[in-house]
Length: 460
Image (cartoon, rainbow, N blue to C red; front, top):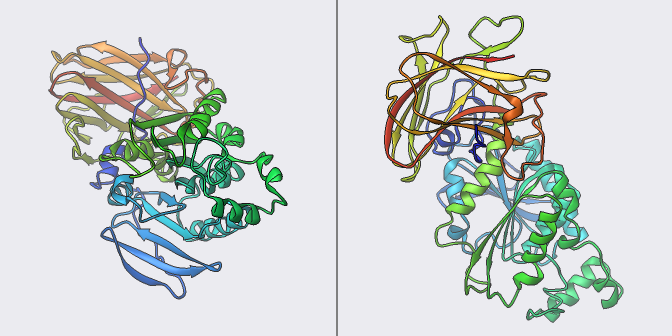
């Protein structure tokens, strides 16, 4: 057995592919749109979606409503410059997939204590309206100060931070105390807003983003930065590179996308897919998993084990060439032992296929040692990697992989929990005290078409 690499997070009753593609949700998944309205609001269209613009807490706020919100009502929040290079940041693509988008106009307040109080109030407001309790913060340029400063105070409310040429130390910008250009006027404004008596007090301040990473690492907030390597306004060496060095040392997860020769502008990427996929993987999927209801098992449970059978119908339409079309449906003609089982049809080019197995959210498997299921395929000559991924009680990913071809006959496969290895740093231990999700995964280096039946998942 080998470690099965990082796989997409799945919510109960839907795959990332199906839900994020805006296709069909599982029966029982929450799809009701929120009844959003604020006093004095004006409505318009922003990237094709309804935008609520309204006064709140002495500021002007936005909430952009996706046409088909995802279960759990996940959101992104752009802290500054919401109309700067927007298509390149991936926000419109996230809206298309069902993610709300927020903005609060705080002016040039540099993530200062007064600004953070306003953010506190708007957060309470949007959660009271039914948006997710945790989300993704977007820090573009000086917006990095707002995103990191607020997240450090409220790590339990943040799943992911996307920083784009973000300011992570105000001594670099606007202070200009390193190799960057700095901005004397903004530096004077910042010192006043933070209440510093003089420049020496500002330079000694211990609360910059580069200094406040430990709470984020403990909460396993995931970070992605996009930087131009030749940025002379917010030099990466004084900002993103320090975050990366320190966060990695703290055990935090971070990805940095470099633009060789790139400057401070333009923000984002020509193709923002890496940003979109990162946010979907590390933030949106977790919101959906927490929101979706567990589906009752269809089979009789033996005294010493837990048996779960899938009862969902989902459709995943491929969104790019290396992703597969995937259909899950009830198997009524080929049941293994009288209970409904899952049928997954994989058809596509080289890539990966994911089959979510429902009914498991919150299951407590503490004290159990293994998981098994009955399996067969209609194309046993296909050579590929097949495996399981468990998302445990703490939201960590653990995988186990088997290789080789399948069988046309019903065969029981058994996996020991002790053999599962964490995706990522590999340092954590699988916690079975209330798992979040389980999925069956296939990968192949060549095109293939295959139908897979899975039945009677047993944990004992």
